[in-house]
Every structure is written in C-alpha cells, then in structure tokens.
Image (tube, rainbow, N blue to C red; front, side, top):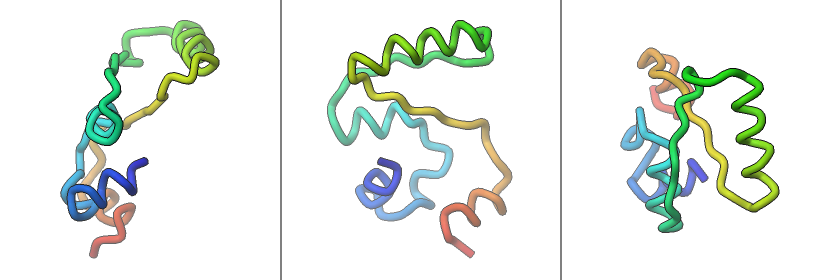
Length: 78
C-alpha cells in the first residue's frame, strides 16, 4: 500500500512523515478512524484489532518520527 501511495505522489521522499490513514483515504476513498495506541493498554489495542480484522476493515499502523538518515535509508534515498 505504501509503495502505491509513494508512486501516486512521485516517490517516498514526498510522503515522509505521512499518516497511514491518509494513504487509505487517497487510494480507496474509505473512511478511517485513528486510535492513538499510547492512550490504551495492550489488551485494549488487541481487542480493537481482533474485532476489526474479521470484518475486513483496513488496518494500518504508523510510527513516531524517525531521524532523517534512517528514513532516507528506508526509502532508498542517499
């Protein structure tokens, strides 16, 4: 999914620090709900994932900002 989104916007550099839900919205038009995981327990997060998966919801995850060198390395830049 990330590769499609990057291709849509030119390359990975153009989507650095993107939000996964934005990619889902842009590529499918599907609505989204974000759940910050730092505000819930592991058990609550697992319950949410477990109930969303069987009903064919899109499930995406993101990470906190990483340093620029690491992000560029992942994107194959530099």
